[in-house]
Each structure stands twice: as C-alpha cells, then as structure tokens.
Length: 128
Image (tube, rainbow, N blue to C red):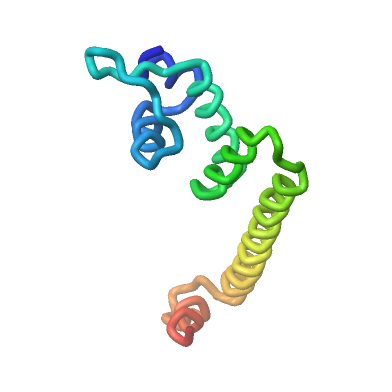
C-alpha cells in the first residue's frame, strides 16, 4: 500500500504518517524505487495509534501501548495501569478547566461592562 492508500484507510494525514515513521512508531518497507510500502500490519498499527491519539494518549503512551499490544505475554494489568494513569490526567485537566471556568464566570459576572474604566477582569489579571 502506498502512503495515500494507507492514509485514507487509517484516516490519518500523510504528514502524520511520515512523522510517526520519523519517530519510529512505524517502519514501513521500502520498494526498490524508494517509496514506502505499507503492509496490513502497518495499517493496523496506524489505526491503533490514531484511536489512541483520539483518546488523548501521548506519543510516549502510544509507544508503550503499541509495545504491550505486540507483546502476547503481556498482562492486562499493565495495559490497565497505562489507561488508568491517563484517565487520572484527564480528570485533573477537567478539574483545572472547571476551576478556570468558575473563576472566569465570576469575573464576567462582577464586571459591569459599561463605559467606565473600572474592570474586575483586568484588575484580577494584573494582580495575578
């Protein structure tokens, strides 16, 4: 499969696929003409990485998950640990965003939004 075909099949941009090759996540064969020749296994890996990235896993986490996926002697506890850690990170981000929203909502509510120069939003930003 050429890069255009695998890009469509994996639903990933060709640029992303080239990047994944550059950082060693995939290693497609090369034809005698030097072009990439993606196998079905490469497609499976790219699809796997795409799904993992869509769930917010980092490149390094994808590397770990790929290694676990390919390791037939792995335990599901290892996979669960990676996913649980990632879930904790997501929960922390949600909490941070919720706190940020509450603070900004309060500032918007307390700002008169009139022609006067006094603004609690700018005052809060200036105070840190």
